[in-house]
Image (cartoon, rainbow, N blue to C red; front, side, top):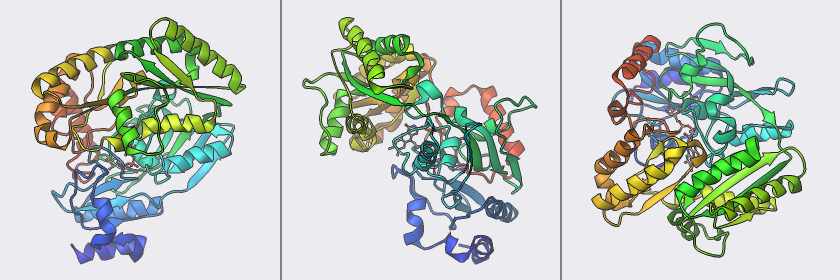
Length: 460
Ligand SMILES: Cc1cc2nc3c(=O)[nH]c(=O)nc-3n(C[C@H](O)[C@H](O)[C@H](O)COP(=O)(O)OP(=O)(O)OC[C@H]3O[C@@H](n4cnc5c(N)ncnc54)[C@H](O)[C@@H]3O)c2cc1C
């Protein structure tokens, strides 16, 4: 640990905001899944964009690498040190002001360290709605959401994090600040630079603030829990609900029976919403302006049709906020309830979801007879979290991955739908991306970060 570096950084952010003691830094050096742990020189906690810029400038001069960190809920090991060189963790947590909210332009300008749930709350207080929503929303931060181009449960209707952004402020790897905080819905003045930093996982610069789009606040939200016989019927049900509800359908999540059972065993305050045992479930949500009863009636009619057509086996609609929250809890607890196994976050075309589940299940059963499969996720976006086995299977991770990813590739899919590459998939992606695509990515990295100081060992 270099005392000169610590002193220089303390001069910028104050001594109290440069953490070096093991007890203070441990949580920053370990990822959420506790798969990656490595030390850095220190954790630096700036509170202003100018402080971020000064820290980055100093690190660039001292050739010290920077690992930007938001809520540290990322699932690919992108937010913790690589341990391969001199690094600092740059925590954005104190850069957490809401700078402006413009109700007539339907925009909110927030700093990178704002916790997602606080941004959602600020929107509600202004009579608006910020649609990005994921189970980690109580601790993940906007900077992390944009850097991973987070998905979540409302992508079906509102798109990924990328679609919520109008402008960005970024500290570049040499410490200069790019002020792209435009609140414009139309701006065709050359390359759309903000898109480079969204989804870059901190490898091209530090996002310090963003202008985000707001939406009208819905009057009514109707969640329903539907038992379906198999994934093929789930996909047909999606088509039917979209045809009947149109853009009112905001979320469409699939949950396999083993996932539900894991949650029921893990969280005492949960219960099976339906009387009988079924192999698959869908959690669907619709929202609209106007009275709850009107929307609930529309959803009920659509579900009657689905049950008549064999797309559903049984269904229940939440008629209260508490009931709706209980249904969502069943979905949101799944990551915790099946914590240690071989994880995948894949995407295929929605129409290929049944083929993927069928082929992957069959191939894994041949290779690893009896291995459990935990399959759930954002089927409305073609995105499944497909986790296999338990701790004992971790040693076989490369073989499991090869089986799953080869099937994904044969279906024209992606090995990382919403969690990014981080350290976890940095090697694997080279098998899947076209050589030209990788060359262009490396050229961009070199152009923006010639010293390779931004989040080394991640993505590329
Ligand atoms: C229970 C649970 C459920 C989840 N569900 C979903 C889900 O439904 N959809 C989904 O997409 N993800 C999900 N995630 C993953 C995770 O929450 C998201 O990736 C989230 O966007 C990460 O935000 P964060 O602030 O925690 O970022 P971090 O984990 O701190 O960082 C993630 C990456 O972004 C970089 N980064 C962070 N802040 C900045 C910044 N200001 N500037 C530049 N780079 C930065 C980091 O270096 C790292 O590479 C889930 C995670 C958990 C634990």
